[in-house]
Length: 76
Image (cartoon, rainbow, N blue to C red; front, side):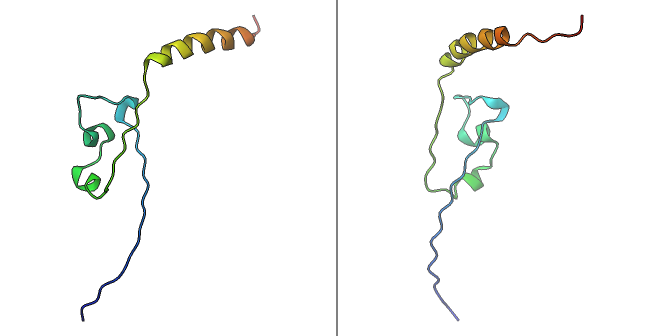
C-alpha cells in the first residue's frame, strides 16, 4: 500500500547562545550548541542580535539609582 499524507506543520523555536553572548566568529550551530543536522530541518533561520554598546550605558544609568534608593541595614 502506497499513500500520500498531507501534513502542515509549523515550528517556531528560539535559542540563546552559549556563554550568553553571540560570537560572530563562530557558526550559528556552534553558538547555540545545536548539531547541523538538526538546524538543517528548519527552512528559515533568523538571527536577531542586540548591540552591546547600549548595555553599559543602561547599566550605568540604572544601577547607581537602584543602589541609592535601597540602603539595607545590617544591624550594625
